[in-house]
Image (tube, rainbow, N blue to C red; front, side, top):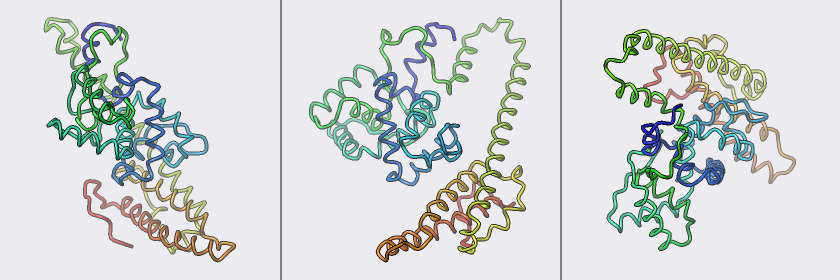
Amino acid sequence: MSNNGSEIDDARETKYINYAIDLHLGTEYRPGVVERALNWRKKASPEAQKTLRSAINNSNLSVQGFRSTSAYSAPSGLLLNQVVERMPKSNDLSGAILRVWVESQEMLHASVVEYRKKADLPIQEYVSGREFPGLWDFDEWNHETDVFVKDNGEHCDCDAALMLCCVSGNMPQLPPDDLEDGTVLPADSIFTHWIEYLKQLSPYAVDWQETEDFISEVREISQAKAREVEEALTAALAKNLGYIEENFLDDLRYLEADINAWTKIDTSKLADVSTTLDTVDQLGDALLAYRRIRAQAPTRSEEDARLAKRSALEPQILSLINQVNHQISSDWDPDDDTAPPEG
């Protein structure tokens, strides 16, 4: 990538989530944010959990003992370094981590909201996504952070600075002198920079003569990449369904679960393979947890505890199986939010 002035300006004004931590708070701060989010994920809201699960499982992480499509189930200690290394390359993963991090910082979040309300400053909560809604003058952001920390000394500077971004919905712009030539822009924004480059290109440039061929080739590449993703997801779904049938057949029979439809499906014709794969991953996790507590415990008190856990897990497993059966049916519409009928 060339190191011209326009690219530096673009980096200064980026709103992308994966810049929020590294450019402004330092790469050494990122592991702490990730670790806190991973440790909090089971306490996070259902929507935040779903977003983070999808982001992690679709990030092709290599976690020992876990399939990449079920990496979310790995312990935080195994996931930490993988997620930390992946975040600068993925705005989706960065956004999902940041959302859970915000939920984990309940006291700090409440303090920042109260502070901005008292100061009559706008609140534009960051919820999730690839970028912050707005931009923020760097000096103004620094000043507001200093003022907040001075009045709320129990919170560290970096946490307060990041939460101010999330509550205000603004991404600070870097001062021109703070961004060196050679800064690598987020990979997710490469097409945006192509468009900006083309807008600046002279109308008399010979490159325009190749426009149709270029568009056609990009479309072909895009379609080929989409097919690669679909094929990988389809293969993973077939493998995971087979794994559940092979390893949990006794448990499924005990629960009188209906999985007859699984042997008849054509995974290449499913309406939404990614969503179905995520449901199957959740089912596998639930069955594994159930397997550990299905046998009778050695003591009565332990058995009482197991019974309560089994009573909670059994309807969850049956509901997930019902979802899978619904999602692999030929009449399933992924855009229809109506829940499948209880089996």
